[in-house]
Image 1 (cartoon, rainbow, N blue to C red):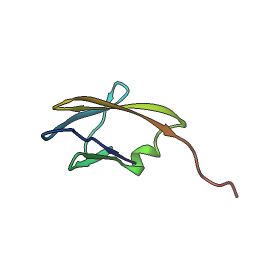
Image 2: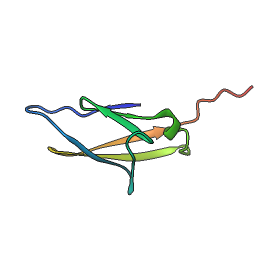
Image 3: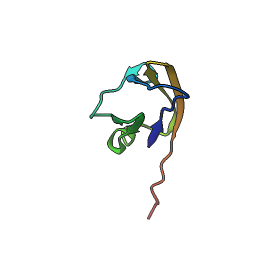
Length: 76
């Protein structure tokens, strides 16, 4: 899952990232490059089906996204 942080002018620096109140760890939970935050599949697989509020702190203010986790595993 890729979340893109865009700005209308200048540059943006990505700071801390949270799932609710839980601070996520770069490399373990996500990667970040060029204003794009990628939540890692291995991390998403640890979450139960629900809606999660992801907060990205940036140098130009916070960005919030709702991520819906659903189980798409086909039953055999």
